[in-house]
Length: 400
Ligand code: FAS
Ligand code: PHB
Image 1 (cartoon, rainbow, N blue to C red):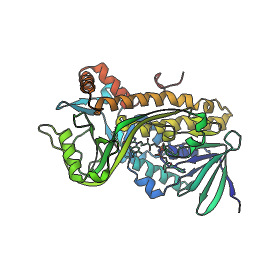
Image 2: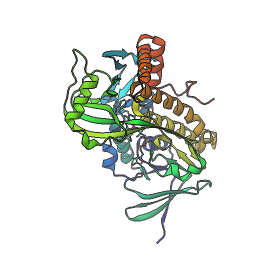
Image 3: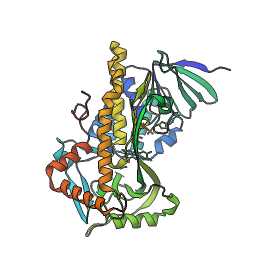
Image 4: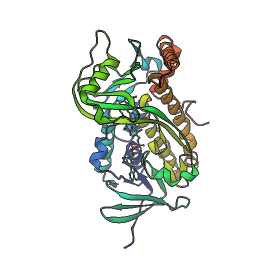
């Protein structure tokens, strides 16, 4: 029996932040979409990832109609701490970056809000799809083939958006047209979610001879903590006691205590920088992690995904409303300026704060850079304006 033919305007592959935000933005403009996700709703909603939203991301999520709980439960921060050589220094982000701030609100919560908005609007969002493939990308009638609940479908559309993450199927489908830039780091992050009140009022990025550590949070009752580990680290070699011991060794200061609690989740995140150019081919557009990956030290991954789909939504809406397809033709060029700015900032934060190997020269350079940042307003402003996110129209990130 052949595949069941169905139709929509924009087919979105992937129900992560990129795909879901795009679907809400397009729905708001009256454009029909179908979202296809290969995992279950529970898996997608419970996958612990990012925690820091740039102010620009907050504004886009408001525009997508999912700002209410984010504003009620999100925690606004106006600074971060850098800790090194036994000293903890505050970087006053908002004072240095025209009053812009960040919001601490877990990616899990963003995804739950977006899914709920789509389901409540009665819009098509299929979980548990399989055998997804994309076809006829260089024609005016591209299509997505997939299986869902034992039935085969062919979804015809005007455009396909590959929001299927780093391990998705969309980028590989056009890889012969792409140029890839990548860097692997010789370390990873071991992250835990703990039932412990945060030990600091703001995030603490720690440089230490034993390795990097990061104190973050999810709520007044939930801490999110990370420590640098080997790239091939095995989670079963890290019982909770060993994790807490290592965190104490890296972040403790006189007169300050790291509060422990039950470890609710733990995982290891590999560290890589990755960009594919262009981010499109024919009627397929890549957005978010399917097109680029940053090491999480700069808290940019989720925020880049949202900025990609903001550009793509505007271009698609323009093409439908006025027939003007220039935004779609320029999509990659428009996104890649911001992507590379985030890639550099994430690389810079990562190489400044992590133990890179045995060469003491690296360590001296790192300490010099950190001392410069905490003693020079100009240097601190560099970190602050990149960390809170440059405005969409900023010359450093806007296409010429
Ligand atoms: P996502 O990967 O979130 O979503 C892609 C979706 O597509 C997934 O739901 C996937 O199941 C689905 N999919 C894949 N293949 C498919 C197929 N063939 N058919 C249908 N669906 C398919 N960023 C930060 O800023 N801070 C962090 O601390 C941080 N920690 C991270 C930890 C981990 C373990 C990982 C992997 C990433 C982390 N990131 C972090 C980055 C992360 O937040 C991403 O930038 C963000 O999820 C990007 O969103 P999407 O582009 O939507 O991709
Ligand atoms: C997080 O809270 O998960 C988080 C915060 C800042 C980062 C990375 C991760 O740079």
